[in-house]
Image (cartoon, rainbow, N blue to C red; front, side):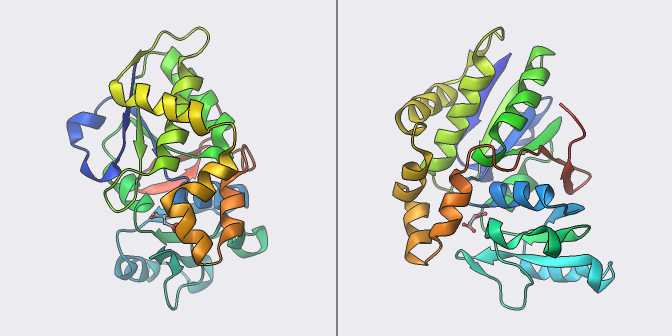
Length: 245
Ligand code: MLT
């Protein structure tokens, strides 16, 4: 099987995705928030392109059944129920709810990955759970594309390093994988930074911006390996928990 990494999720073409399993990685913070929301019992998460789209789509639901969620410039959108901090997504807030989520990069990368055979959402917080599914699919012959959300169409160190961890995890023991150059480069980043994820997330540009906004707790939540062991899958325009590995 072949494993590739796309470092900026915004410019994928249908041909990049066709027939492959995609994993959308936005460590800070959308992938982690999605994993946390589903672990806390959210029914489904619907990625929306814009705040206006989220508001319009909420009208199809009873108000008590939906939560408007997301950020712009890392800060909660005025009038929305939730921002993009994993800690906000507690069971008493999200259990049974449909979350309409719009974020700057993560939800865009998800929307752009729709043409893949299957689209998973991965990060450090659900690493082992997602890896188990990826290994099973790779063993069955699926090629894998890891889609880093990146930051404002640019490379993001934390997403690339996490992608590298997935590449290493898929390609070890018993799976013969052909690695594209992006996948090779990502594994080098995981080797360099993967032993101290907290430091990686505090040092990268996005992490420093979150720290400046007083959101250090989010960095710790996003660095917590396997804290939310769920496998989110994006199908039929919504993200739900995948049944089993
Ligand atoms: C995004 O999707 O761009 C991120 O999750 C931004 C953030 O809220 O930190």
